[in-house]
Image 1 (tube, one colour):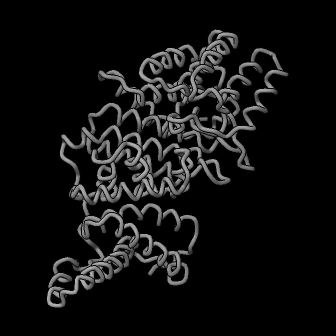
Image 2 (cartoon, rainbow, N blue to C red; image 1 turned 90 degrees about the horizontal axis):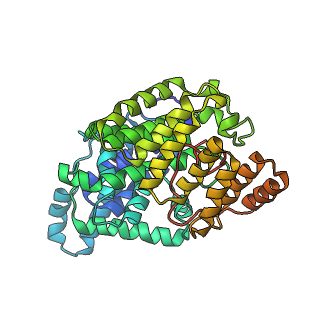
Image 3 (tube, rainbow, N blue to C red; image 1 turned 45 degrees about the horizontal axis):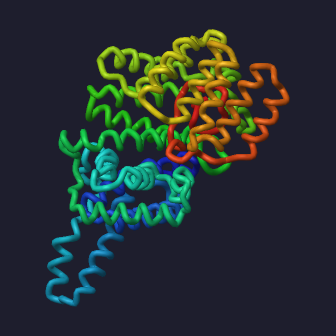
Length: 421
């Protein structure tokens, strides 16, 4: 045992290890639901014992051992219920593998678990929910909040997804090239959502959850290692890096949000910006351009401006024009309206915002009022701006079907996913 004290770093270690341990246990026992329960019990044991005993040198092996023991107990219980005393000993021997503190794990069991959760046997919503729970480490309440459904509904959805995984008999392994192609869209979307939840948390007092953003970046790097020539994977990784580069400047000492236009750009992570810019610059000329690449390009324009006055809004507007052609997401329209206002004046922006009122997904959403208030403030209409700022503050509703989308160009928006400040 080490003598490392129990602190926030220790909690982050558990969050990082959880999906790896879950993947290892599923691969051994082939039971998603009970494996997750066993891993949860192992995590509880770690939280209880490690602060007093110290963190084990092989933390992952310790957790796998404890979870495997729980699974062994479960298997024995199931076998005993069959009342075949003669078969009990033999079946336990066959079913329960030897416990190894340093198992020969696959390169990244978390990555295998990620693709497994995005199996085509599941609906997109179920795959996203299950992956956020099993791989991203989000609570059922956090996922329910993101999807605008009751926690009980989300719990049932996740439970059904686990049952479907078990019933499908899908082996725990990296998918074939054909299977990867079928699941990749869902995998990237899930990583996008995990990053979003970390960058702007939907619940709790903290604006940011760096453990989730870092895990999303790590997993996206893993996927890119698997598929190095896929432009959208590169675009998503670039978007995450370019956005996360601003996290130190996003809040003040009290944890309040600082808009993009007011941030101290000296606090931005220049290394991450350089990596993100290089990645998207190398990716865009290769051919087919997707929405992640366009969002990354917008983020790059923001990050490369030494001062807010140096921001190339015409380029951003052109990129949003392209993005709108690919997506009917009204949050893209809101960002486009802000960019248009920065290029052509607030009147043009207000015209575009007013047109969005016909879209039921965003008509009564606080972001519409927030953007309208910002544009009215730009136009010099202080009373109108105050009215809509107050209206925005009184609402907290995400537009159905768009609440999990984020775009990097809207400097006017505050806490949430319509604009990554």
